[in-house]
Image (cartoon, rainbow, N blue to C red; front, side, top):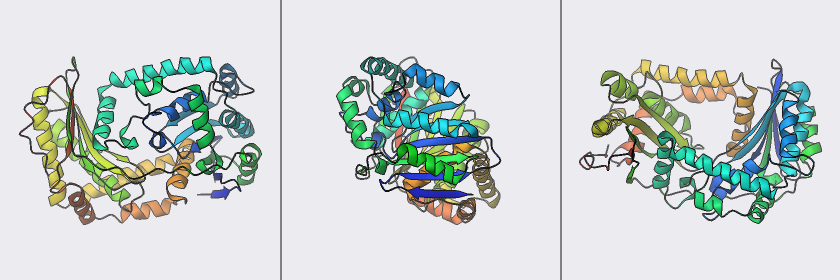
Length: 420
């Protein structure tokens, strides 16, 4: 790793990584914000702004922005998460200066045209409808809302139809001016670059950014292990999401909990997939995953099954989790999980976009950069007994949260014991 970081007087941080074997470069402008930093009345405004940033600046129309990135064969996109927003470009390294000019214009000079705002409002309504039509996505929103009640982490990133309908242009401008400031911004660049050139381009385009005030994420959410059933007619399957509180993204246990999830339901060789799909044929799709934030986390299991098989699937998931608590993971299974994680990490090193993302996220959450050797050492240092102990801390004698989405009303599940 050839990584450098520079902090400007206004609080802006730029992180650069040289990858001389590539022909490309990825540049990301990251806001240390996101839907967590919204109030209930303006829920979805960060995502709304993400859309609007591409709809016109003082010098470019939306069409001109699209034509500009196409003229160099590049990629221009953005996304909003709960704790950050990113808009980024990927271009050939010879177009680095051009990409900086385009991204800085989008970031610093948006005009939020009224007519474009109304069009994008309708586009976001369609996005919300798409989630309603996708039970695998919808159940995650319902699960997190029930898990972290009355906390911003429990709200969907896109907001609701009601909240988005009420967002005004004045609100957008006010939110943008207050939050999109130097102290809340990280510029990350990875690819075939020179550190000095990237730093000078950052200074030229972003050094004049107003310092502003650092955003506060507020307090951590309280965990609620609720049972929630949402009926949705015409679904052939019942979609299941169940889980528990787990260590956060910044915890020292983050690698151990990733290994635990990998072993439990991280792939086709995982315990849940083998037990519930391969051995018994009770579900087509089943896996475990993690939702990790700076001060909160949840480990969850997702499955989709026929309504008359739902109770049996839930019982078997609880049984497999209990096994993780009581039995040490065999050496060969732990080795496979570690190799799986390490393989994913090593493959990501070959992508400038992945490295750009990792640089920004490490700066946002840790304010330092981890070498590959450090990460490998942390993963290799997790023992089977460590995973068993962590499983006990997460699950044992605790009631799992359960969310169901489907045509059934949840009857037949009252007798299922969700306590591990």
